[in-house]
Each structure stands twice: as C-alpha cells, then as structure tokens.
Length: 248
Image 1 (spheres, rainbow, N blue to C red):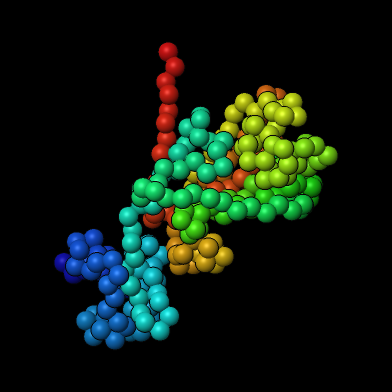
Image 2 (image 1 turned 60 degrees about the vertical axis):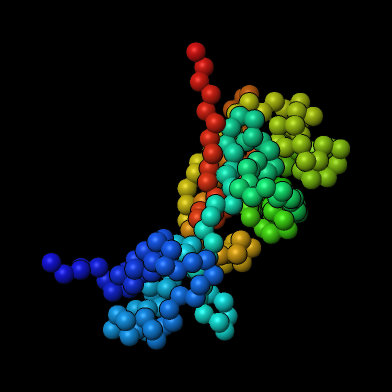
C-alpha cells in the first residue's frame, strides 16, 4: 500500500528521522530547497512547508543568507513545580553546571485584559500592576513571565512594586505577608501554543514554534485571587518537574 502522507509531511518526517538517528548532527545544514525538490519531486511550496514544520518542532532554525541548520535540542533544564519552588521568581534546575541565573523586570500600571480579569475575578479594565520578566541563563533569555496584581490590594503599600522597595524579590507570598495577606495556595494550568513573534525573538526560536505556558494564580485564605501570571518557555528545551508529597 502506498504512502498516504502528504509529500510535505513525508519530507519533514524523513528529515526528523535523520536528525534523531544522528545522520544530521547539531549545526549541520539541512539539504537545500533545490536538493529536496529533486529528491522528492516536490514544488517550492511543498518543500518550504516541510521546513516550516521542522522549524516549528524545534529541529531546525534558519540563518539569514546561509540556510537552515539543525538545532541543539538537549533540554536546558527543568522548571520545578513544588510547594517550596512554585513561589520562587525563577525555580529551575539547569542541565549545564555553572550556569549563572539572573532576571530583568519592568512594571507598569495597565487595565486588566478580559482573560486576566477572569483569572483575578475582577472587572475587565480594573487597574492592575503588570510586571514583565525575562529570565536569563548565562545572559541568554530562557524564560519569559508576565505577572498581574490588582492595585486595589497593593496600591499605596511598600510591596506595590515586586522588584523594588524593602520587600523586593521576595516572591508573592513573602511580599503580601508584609501587608497582612496570607497566601495559602497556588493553582497552575499547563498548556502549549505557538510562540508569538516577540516570544520567538526573545527565546531564540522560530515564530510559531511550540512553547509551554504555565498559567499560575495565587489565592489568599479567603479564596481571593491576589496575583496571576503566565510563564513561557520553549517546549523543546524545558521539562516540568513535579514534586508531589503524599500525606497519610
């Protein structure tokens, strides 16, 4: 029985297999468009679509004026998801030793978008403090995060700015405890989607490549949502590591 796969899918699958089996190593150039056209009797559009599939899966990246090359897919590390780690600004275990982890952040007042308002259980357009983070390993961005906190809770206090003031960089629980709010739990929803162009540029991948998104929301003892955030990493380079203790 003949191969029923579309030609572009067959090309992409064959290239993936060659990479997985070591026939094409990290840094090797993927066969050119003309080479693939001849090998598969395919059109320009079919070959281009196959290469886009390969890029979106994290197997290859284009270099302007040079061609398309096999990328390094060894995991950079694991995002640690546990009771002790979930509140950390950058809870990660890196694969490479001697990795310097730092982050940069900027905050601004915005009106809550509808999806953020739903997660914080506030009205759309209510004022929130939006903090955007870029986490770096040896000065290279590896994780992005955006946090939103209702200004109705923190405005006028010493903790309004997460990265400035006497309680800077203490995490959501540590900061809010300073103003008498006890954060008792966090909820996380984990999903995936194509990377936006700004995300791809920051994380060094192709636009449309799959990223993992962790939507995390913190709640106080009354069940009130006090902070919500989106954490974004490349799906091909990061794993989620869960530590789940059992109680008797």
